[in-house]
Image (cartoon, rainbow, N blue to C red; front, top):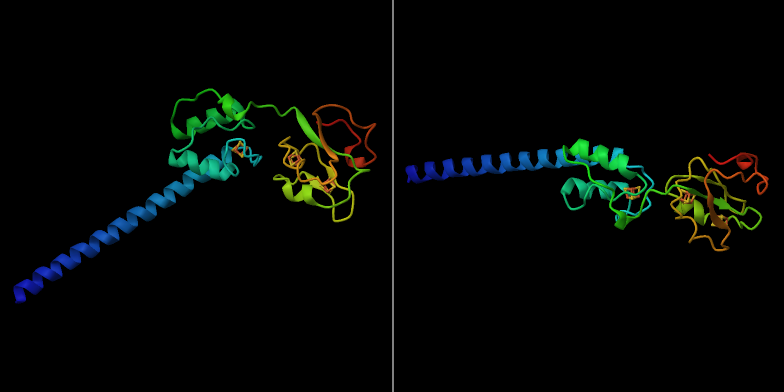
Length: 184
Ligand code: SF4
Ligand code: SF4
Ligand code: SF4
């Protein structure tokens, strides 16, 4: 009887040790995964445009880290970002996949301030805080922060946001001092 109890005790101890080791391994794996996601995310442009087919840069970084998305799906980041991610992962770089769009930050958004009703819907839609304004007041876009993602256009109920070529002089269209200069 004592012998059987001793065997059971040994088996229980071994099982506990295995569970402990396995949990420690899982925690380490999760922590390494989180670190990798953060590193990949830091290389992405944070435009949050969704062109990669994910809900933003971090979910895309997570998919890359899991191996469920390729490294060449971010058009705003362009070839330079593909190269950086490849270097981080110790992989071969590859061309940006045109199926997700090409790097074309040639446009920025422009609000027709006379038509703006100050509904703040565009501010909520802008992932990079490139729009300033408050409820019931005219809104305006800071061109140097605008990534050209166009996410603010659809929510505008009065269609007063349009895309203009980055670099054009819009001073004749603007009264706002912030924007009465050449877009850069
Ligand atoms: S395409 Fe690039 S910038 Fe746009 S959400 Fe995906 S990772 Fe972010
Ligand atoms: S296009 Fe609109 S939503 Fe996108 S960054 Fe520019 S202002 Fe923000
Ligand atoms: S969504 Fe259109 S109307 Fe509303 S605040 Fe923005 S620009 Fe103005």
